[in-house]
Amino acid sequence: MILVYTHKITPRIRYIFKHIFTRILLSPVSFTSKIEEFVAHNGPKISYTKVPLGKEFFIRSNEILFEQGVNDLEINISQWNGTPCFFNTGSGSSIPFDIFAASFYLISRYEEYLPHVRDVHERFTAEQSLAYKFRFLEKPVVDIWALKLKDALLERFPDYHFSDREFSYISTIDVDNAFAYKYKSFVRTSGGFIYDFFKLHLKSFWDRLMVLLRIRKDPYNNFEHILSLGKTYNATTIFFFLIADYTTFDTNISATKRQFRMLIKHIADYAKIGLHPSYYTMKNSALLKKEKERLESITNIPTSLSRQHFLRFSLPETYQNLIDLEINQDFSMGYASHIGFRASTSIPFYFFDLDFEIQTPLLVHPFALMDTTLNDYMGLTPKQSLGRTKDLLKEVMAVKGTFITLFHNESLSGYLRWNGWQRVYETMLKMIHKHVN
Image: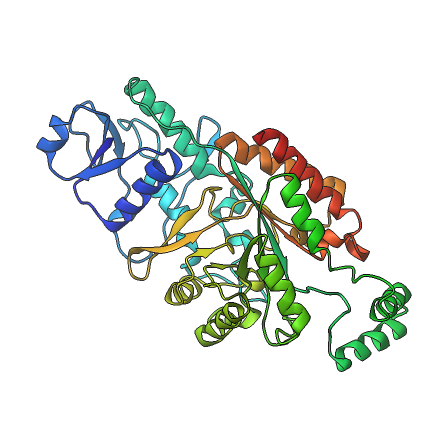
């Protein structure tokens, strides 16, 4: 066990030290504010305060972990053996920056509480983040820092044993539209035919007709294939179903449709199921509750997993609403416009509520990439996207983190603009399976 001395033990200190030591480095940690207890400890120990007590492993503390609320902080980026870092500690400290304060700033999403300009969907944008501005968005720097800290501690305490982490992978599938053409209302189907006709989308017009006449299978109904791939490559797969009332942004078929409900029940027999809260649930707890209860009425299973539609969430309100409804795992932590690590980590972490200054029971799973980011926002081909996927995968493997991807059943259909994207997904699964096995 590692003992940490600090002049004041705050909720922020407990939170970030435990995350780095117990969740990333898999080592127990305890705290003391008594100098005599720290001096008497024979095992590895760290002092985290303003001045060292002696010649111990010392990290000069930044004020952020002793404060409450948020402040507009001046941040200057430097380098630690080639890795960007900030909150420099100056001479006398065992490492050149306050790793705990910097990690807390990034993982708590401190910057998202500060005044910022939102995009058209009222989201915090990647471009306003520290990671984007200083070009480390595609590196899980918190995980990298933790491993460097481990090396520094082993130099000082060579007899101490850290357990080894194992790389893991989670494939997440968002089901925004379970079917391209089937089981939609007469109005939507008629409107689709008219739109395709006047826009000269002849392939869509013909395909819609063939599907409705039951001559062809609906192109988005590829769930058996996705399940088969998960089984073949031993990939943990989670499906997030959008079961909202119809809006401009929520266009799945009605959850009252028997075929849709049967599909959800079937998938739940073979994979994990999560809620895909609709566009307008970002700050609407009543609507969120309605959709959660709707999914539970279909599956007869308590809903504990969630990912916001359009990745549309606002901190801390959206997460507070999830917690109130006893949803304890969220998979929304990522950007729509950019790949990479929104919280600068690949390892799941508990949400720290800066409004109440507490660690919450909500476990946040950050994802590294999304299909629509690569195709729509970045305009990459499937081949180029596979290259960027490999780069991110290498970053996560290097820190033995959790690689989480976000695809849609639409993209894995290979239909129309998604031609070739099944190959990206399957090749990625093969690479991961080969590495793990």
